Image 1 (cartoon, rainbow, N blue to C red):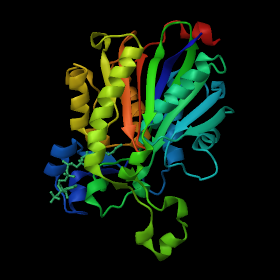
Image 2: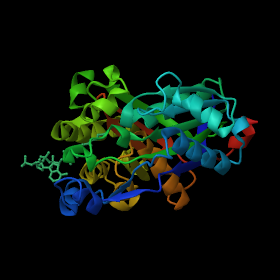
Image 3: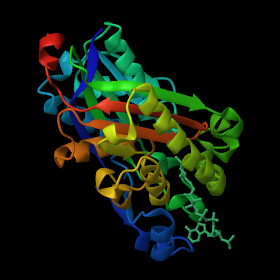
Image 4: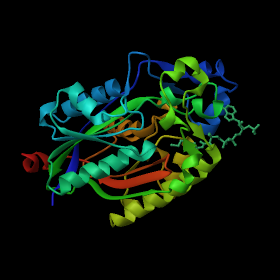
Length: 335
Ligand SMILES: CC(C)(COP(=O)(O)OP(=O)(O)OC[C@H]1O[C@@H](n2cnc3c(N)ncnc32)[C@H](O)[C@@H]1OP(=O)(O)O)[C@@H](O)C(=O)NCCC(=O)NCCS
């Protein structure tokens, strides 16, 4: 049974930087409060010219180039998003057209847990022998659903996209074990009320009625700390590894305190945890592929390293996995 190695990676974020000082001018908050409670210093927010498609396509092109492939080499595109640009058309189909690919394409919707879930789904397609080259994208522009007068949510999120290319290999590479779960009874802790009933034309008439994210921060925080720990440990056990076998943690970037708790549980010093939420905030499904891309570009991921990826979010939902970094032997199996 083939494995699914990560052979390419890339990310894209909007140019517009919104700092904590900018938010201080919009809501009653302070840089000190935001940094001490979350670790976030600034985030990127889309302008009129950006979209989920434009960010996802740029990240995808970069990942395909990094893999040394052409978009026409990709057989399947899976996009994790909760902010697709169209209700009917999948975000993956929009990315397919934007990058000039002919691949099969569909979306995975699991909010912040979406990318790890999509990585798992895509890996299964390679392991079953159905496809040999799959593009997995995590992309979101949640700022379009944020109320920038609500200080409890507007300081947390940013926009962005990240992508990876998976290729079939006979070597033990890529996602080796995974766990996922959901608890829909907690859905009201993080959701967008009224979104399904919303008529876009009413935005002009009733701007305040525009659907926006509502969150019970403390409930999500408690859930996140528990589930990050439990899901990571479960994935490590499923991979038949010990804590000592783990070289790196690439966690969902929501809150530095949640990340530090996960690192402590895995016995990892913070220099073996990739953190970028100070620069991007929580980019929903994009946090992990952006972090993978940055860590790889910084030379922090070495051939054979065992990496825990773990995410949680609206659903409530979670997903974790242990992946082995590197491309050894990949091209032989993918030919
Ligand atoms: C949102 C979060 C940072 C809030 O931190 P907290 O320590 O739980 O803070 P609380 O909600 O208890 O609020 C403490 C006080 O700060 C206030 N506050 C909330 N947001 C604020 C802001 N941006 N600036 C200043 N004060 C703020 C609250 O109104 C509250 O005031 P009060 O005590 O007068 O009522 C934290 O709960 C969290 O990170 N939760 C997880 C959220 C998450 O990860 N969401 C995404 C999931 S994918």
